[in-house]
Image (cartoon, rainbow, N blue to C red; front, top):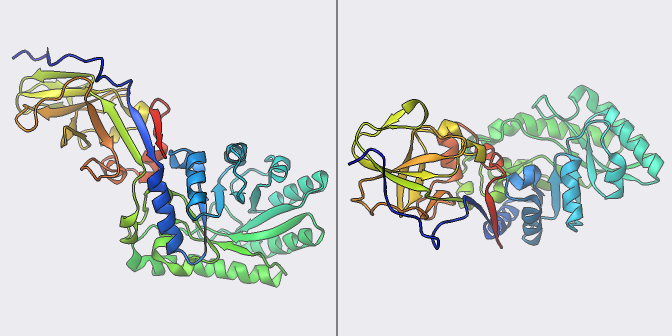
Length: 391
């Protein structure tokens, strides 16, 4: 047997155009309904980072049709495509520099978070110049020491916001925070969330003392929504959960459905001897005579290189190991000697990632193999995938 014998020949009818990323909006719909039922308040569909890599407009439209009443993004730049698509639901943007385009936000009816006096003053100026009233959500740091007003600055921010409200420049419609330790199991969630809950309750009390009566209060994201009802308030912000990711791995999260599938065609199959080195640095050598299948997807497509030597794909109904290093554009799969299912041919499809119903690897498994968060896996997928949307 030659070490580099090519096996099979491609058929024009079977060769795919290339790797495919498929988004299942039915799964997004199912997840939205389940999460809406799990919260005691309303549901804000957070579609930042292009809907966690699944397509912001598609995810937003689906979520709104199945129980969400609000949309959320980080930057104003993420808000414009949603409005361009004709989505008129209440929309909040909560992470912007002081000199952001507040005027356009007012014109396009985008609510904005206010984490500081400087932000408030900039929003008030835009409101005065445009003759509009800005809808704002005061943002309190609930223990992360990042975005949101520090507790020491919060009472003064609330008083300034009340003055601006009295002058007609702003309407404080919301209070918001984010929990630092929500990504935990249901058993320990209440204890882990207790300091953040207490900080938020303190912030609500100070806002009331300043004369503010906002109708919306939101603290929980996906994890806390699933594990700690004390965090729900009037609304929960759900992002990762819409696409099937449960950051805390709760039992409730097991009911969420993965909404992403990655497929790639076999480009080549070769028969090799035992001891054949595979990929850069020969980090893997075959332990027996076997067949190697080449797939045209790699770390430039968002498949983590750190999953090399651990990842698997589904090919001909069986899990097959990825061997050698995942390269920029390609990876190699050991498909065996053909005794268990035969040797695949060029053009056959490998399922790299999916919901797991057919035995294929899931987002959570790729995250474990690569030492990443599931969020990093789905938001890191490159632009080279051919995208399909199942509605």
